[in-house]
Length: 194
Image (cartoon, rainbow, N blue to C red; front, side, top):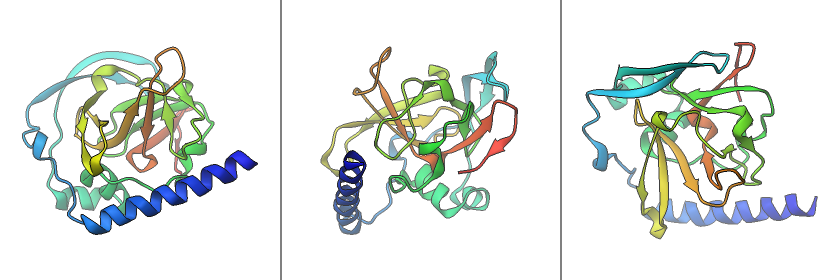
């Protein structure tokens, strides 16, 4: 109980500090580093039962902000298209313990399996590896004076979260992912919402 209270106090402090930064620098980040996303990309396809179907070559998904806003909720748009971050413990997937597959909320690309999810204590869903390395991209993120590695969907360029080197074995990685960037398909094929 004490560790949970400490975590909530630390998360509240972090949110306050981050909000001050956002209020000070309120211009939404854009994808200047990756503006030309047209063309093809190879990803690994999975069915809803989480079975690997093989490598496929697909068109990258490129849409205007107006098109994304029609498809996504305001929170999903802020996180995936403007590189936002949801509040810790604010969405259900951080506490989801069902078996299944996590897909990109924007394009449906398979991203993570539930058997690589672990309790990180951060308030965001955390995984020690993606379902397939081909399905994600990463790039340096130096925003807010921090050196981090941003994680994106390889097919549509959606901002998913960040990866850190403080995760469990066997990889030692922690993919800290926003629930708003994900949709979850249970092992029985039904979709679950946070």
